[in-house]
Image 1 (spheres, rainbow over the protein chains, first blue to last red):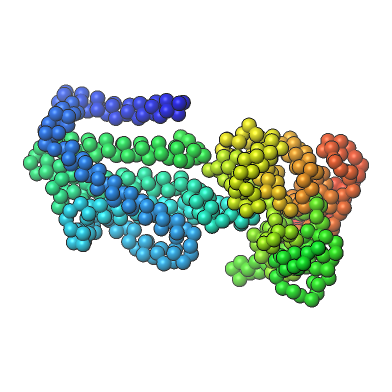
Image 2: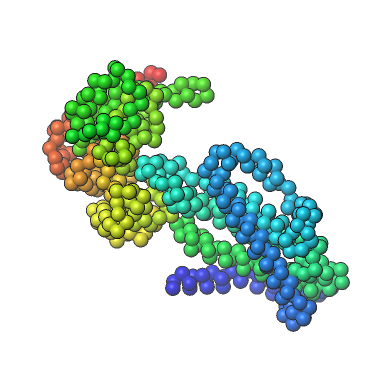
Length: 256
Length: 288
């Protein structure tokens, strides 16, 4: 009960700085300090978002983008975690995959989008695959780091008490790496948003990225801002959900 | 009594005829742990370092032995070798077990941070018990509770280690060490990071638990007072490379009162004797 109230309080505090920003922006726009052709007042944007954009199909765009993000994110994260734990525990797996990983990791994922579209077509699948690849690397690297930085004493305790392989992985390695895994999951969700919007700029007929690009082409500034604002809100929801999940699953970690 | 000698002894690395005597003694004298001319060398960047060499001693079943020595004398490495966490390079180590699978039955208490931070106090104990085929799942809760009561932490079963003080954490470690009812309990400077008062209370706790369970204990420390207070026998080691300098029997009555014992002439005498031994080692270090 107490923790639910704390969560609500935290959420309330989180809204303060964005609210201040909007108020300042509104004042500047109304006072004429900003050119409203490029920087329309927040009230104008919100009006557009809630009363005009739905008519233009923003809900469908959001649904498509979220679907692509979720499908890619979950697949990429699951694979990244599994391979990260595998590489952390098995020297053979590490030797086999590490060279490939460090070569492919720095390649901007958007740079391989044309290639992915060539292989998986121009539909949803190619976007999902790019999101998955981006998430995969971030989660993999952080999971591997988590397994590597497990204190050596846990291995000693496991050896002395002859902890079974299964228990060692599921009760020691995975929980012990969770703080690091969560760092990867949080980085990956933000990155997934970036990738999906960029992927939708070209070769999509639905999605938030498509909406923004379309608005730019038709000089529909308010729609563009509506799209940008929705991305921000999605980012906030995703990160906040992961924060909540982290505090539930990693209760032993020092809280901030 | 034991039909299968291979099951009776474990980890005999090589049957060197020189050490047959040691093995015979181990059988006849009911030794739980026998080391014979045990050595451990590391190779680090082409340089050979000796952790300890020529270590021979035996520990009888139910005995409390302290291994005392200056830091870097290889006493922790020796303990880890007995635990099976390291392998020795020379000599023989026999750890007796009555287990059918031939694995030595060992519990270990480490310096610190050896509890799993993602498990509650209860789960830290239940986990090692649940993993041990000697225990039925149904009896685990009562065993965990029994040992938490013994170390005075029954009210903290649902706490995570980071919510406990250093002394409480080591109480949990001790409870975990005893809970699996091992034949041998190895302790690696478990109280080194605790303040004096906390350490006193834990000495008292450890002595009373040892008194009631009669485990074979090998306790590594660099604290002379601690060693004399706890042990029936103190093995004093030399500075690196660690060898046995002297073994001193501590003929103090049990059960020991950790406060009254400090006034005894005999207790103070042991401390003086061992201090002199360590002083020699410190001087030899300075000459190097």
